[in-house]
Length: 240
Image (tube, rainbow, N blue to C red; front, side):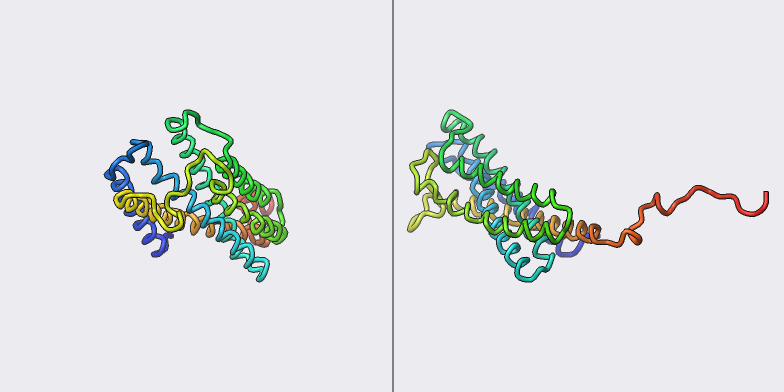
């Protein structure tokens, strides 16, 4: 059964995605990069959403350790999983952009290497959760890792200023100035809103799934009976 909130969010996401696509293709090409510059509208919002998702993972992990309420563990799981997806998307799009721009798909620069490490750390977080059968032990250990992993975000984000890097400096979040013309900036914000709504919907659905998985894991085995347990072979009764 689809909730009213879920229906509203799905429609809003669809509209936002369509508007973002129209603005991305209607916006003028960047002077130096040409058509490949349009990948910017996927690349930057995706890593921004990953940062936000991992920050919520930190909050959910901390709240679980403070309250032992499993709903916070479900939120941490959902946001970590969605954040890992968007980090992987960031890496793939960045490689597609790098080939015509730098001549190679990958270079071991600080930004790229640290982003890849962050991606694998959160994949490790998800693997840890699958390796521990007990829900409470799993939630507790995952919460600790979820809180420690957040230290990667400022390192990844400021790596282009802390170390000499082939990767270009930040375009949106530069102190005191924005390095984009207005049409490109409008298209970027439209793409960011679309990605934010999409990630919100994914997090909600994954959190609901995590709740169902938890209820199944903690249910009474005598009550949660599969169909095969309820059906027996026919038996003859009475005298032959």
